Image (cartoon, rainbow, N blue to C red):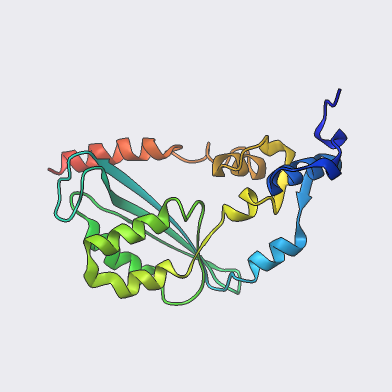
Length: 209
C-alpha cells in the first residue's frame, strides 16, 4: 500500500546509499544532501579547478599508427579553469585528421600543472582517454600521468547519494542534472548531443581529406 518513497520504513532499507538518498529527499520535500560526505569529497578539490571534457570518434578499422580496432580518436577538448578569485579561463582545441599529438601537446599546455581536474564520469571516459594517449604516445607519459592523478569524477557525489533531488527520477546523467539547474542549458547550444558533435566533425574532417 506504499505509494510514495517518503512512506517507506527507512529502518528496513537494505539497498544502496542512493536509495537511502531518494527516500530522504522525498521526506525532506525534494532534496537530500549528505553534508559530511560532500564536505569530505570537496576537501580533495583544490584551486585552480579545471573542468575537462573530450569529444572523440570511434574507428572499427584503425586508420592511424598505434591504434587498435575500435580505438577512439579524441578530436576536441574544452577546458574551463575556475580560479580562486572567481575568474574563469577557457581553452579549447579541435583538430582534423590524425590530430592526437597536437591535441595532447595543447592540452598539457592549457591544463597547467596545479589544481584539481574535474570531469563528469571521468572514470568511464576522460581517464580512459588519458590512458589510451599514454599507450599510443609513451613519450608523453609523465605529463599525462600528472593530469591523470589530479582527476576527480564529478559524478561520484550523485552516484553515491551525497546529493539527490527527486526531479532526478532515479538517474544522475549530466543532462538530467543540468536540466534541473537550468532547463534551457542544452537548448542554448548549437550542438546538443555528443553524437551530433561527432557527425558535424566528420563533415569537416572528410572535407579536408
